[in-house]
Length: 115
Length: 114
Image (tube, rainbow over all chains, first blue to last red; front, side):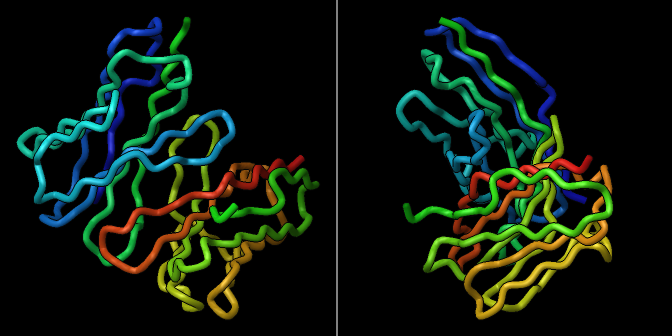
């Protein structure tokens, strides 16, 4: 069975601090996809990144970076120099290679960035 | 705005009433998904359409729930004889064909059953 664990329920940081959100997943498939979504107070889930199981290269996009390690089944997300606008709930999700995006989400990490 | 649109944004209903939600996906997307999100939890998959065909339903979708996607365009999710446990955010998402295409979510319909 698929499972995504986000052990950090809530993280509070001060603006400009770096912060890492942890994600650990479980799957029996060899082909799968991992995602991060951001959910601001408005409620809409905003897509941040997709990674397939065959690509373990880390990725950087502006202040965001992702570290994918199959050996530890982790897909962690780091925000560098956090800003107040980063305050949101962040979800890690997993989709097995079944041909459509049936996402299994973690319980989310609420990030609060204070000025 | 060409994103996923959901209507209504908020719905308050009395227990036992029927409610219907609508989702308009991104126009070129042939895949449409419904998820349910309760407070403090991540979204949970409910059902999936490819064009007009409903291809998968979660066991979370009891007999009181029905979803349709006539003509493969917009979709509706109906809940009959609502219960307080149905109170949640109902999210719709759409994606294009392809194993890795990401799903784009709407802003959701928040249902409160009183």
